[in-house]
Image 1: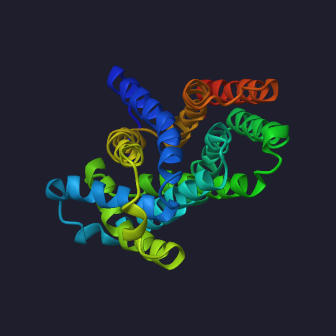
Image 2: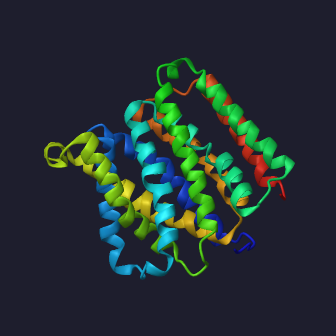
Length: 288
């Protein structure tokens, strides 16, 4: 496992990942307005696998690692994220609850990698949880409890995935992680989609260009570019240093949601964001 100093390229990769993921919540929402969640995710995975297949190395030597991270990332994180987006119209809330993944990541890192978080990081994470509690009692979200629970479970699997990345052998490239998780995850998600949503051909015949563009954005910008930057960072730096920066994603999402979807930014939401940013600052400034 590497622990290299942060350089300009690392910061650029982090910015690309956060901006791409911030817009991805809107893309997913546009997609699931027309396409059932598991079918939409199946389309995304098929595109990712097709675009990257010719650039991938033989997965057999590390097959068990690919299968493990595929289970955590594809049906676990992405599947539940798409489902949560289908269950509520509030994109901003989903983006905030997904950011609980640093808490789960640090917990799993402690359990699996023995990377014990320091007191300050624990305080920062407690502040992040506190921000979610503030948001949970936002009046506009009182009817979205199921979606928020599903989003929390999605965050848990994202945290597990981030830690599993750190346990993989060093010779595995980020592009192989992205490509093979998509390829191995496709039959998992497609089976769920067929069982819960039926044949996709009837649905896809009525999808507009906006729906397809949303899936395309989620495929290229989020799955390949942003996720590739994130995987690269997680391979270069300790989980405790990288994962907390994902708390900045909802700030991007909330801003875009207000501009493009007309979502209202309430005082309670601003308080939650402020607490979230304060927790992130403590985590980022802590040496351990």
